Image 1 (cartoon, rainbow, N blue to C red):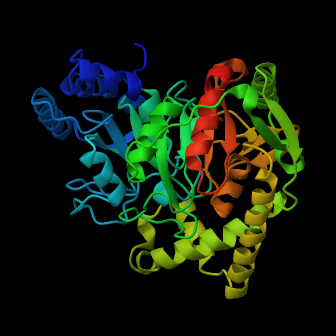
Image 2 (image 1 turned 30 degrees about the vertical axis):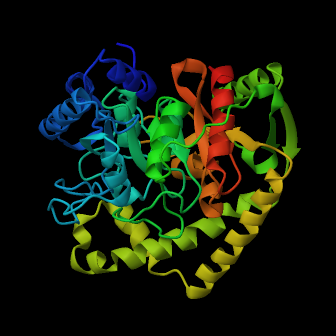
Length: 443
């Protein structure tokens, strides 16, 4: 059955060609088909979703329309509070009590008429890239259940790719929206840092955390982002590919790419230039030192938040996540201060690279989805840790706070790759316009 976009479903709802109840029933049917295989959800709430859908349909019958998300079923990563549903963070650590209120981002989406299907699975406390370390079992790739869906928002990507809702809300601290979106052939948007509120979301690193949508198309991600930011429905500029210039950073970003990803990337860039787009080389001199800035910040801030639980219930964590959190307790103050200074340097370098171009362009992932249980992977004849490879091309833009989006690319063997675009800070709308222009060319 073909996947349905938010734009198409919203138009059909407005015309009376479909009901919100029918959209939710379709999501429930897809959950019955694919939910167990992918393990995308921790808490699935079909009865609550149907009740909300009936309310949306009653409103529509009276001529009350809340906007393009009215009656649209979506899901939320299980770090995000949704009133009446427990927030587990894919862990046995937190109390199993329903959230008393919505996180701000959930409140905005539900006020706009979006319907929650439930809470999606993830890497425990978002502290990983594979979505394997979860108290509720690993998330599995929707196209091949022997492979990883990516993380930490793996359940969100698996849900959307399986038709269990038309979009999902994830979080991104080192790439956790873009990594699973790229691996699962979806659009994943990390907005400018601070643009979408993270109140009511279990933190990984308060300095670097972002929230954003995973969706089927750029327009659908744009609709979600508009509501999540509280901006409503701003004008969406249209850009022509022939008027665009993309900056392609060299060196570090292309030193470690799997052959199938490199071929997919080159084909995508050739399609862009073949349609009249222009490319300029740019430089981000200290990009290879991104982990040196990232790790002290994330480790120290996560360990601080988890300190009470590490004292009272350390045995309830999955072993790998507990180890990372314990490591964070040994980050020195001077290490943290140096990392914050390095963050400023990297931010200025990305700003400089964006001068004179409409966006930066690079792959979103160095590899396609690896088999479950893979700790190291061969890339270009080098054995590399899977976690480091997955973070390699996304992590920098969490450090700097620039908006970034991944678009799907077909790779050899049938597994997707991702084409990543990075925009200027506070100009997410322009980045989305660039992405929409490229979307048709890449398809």
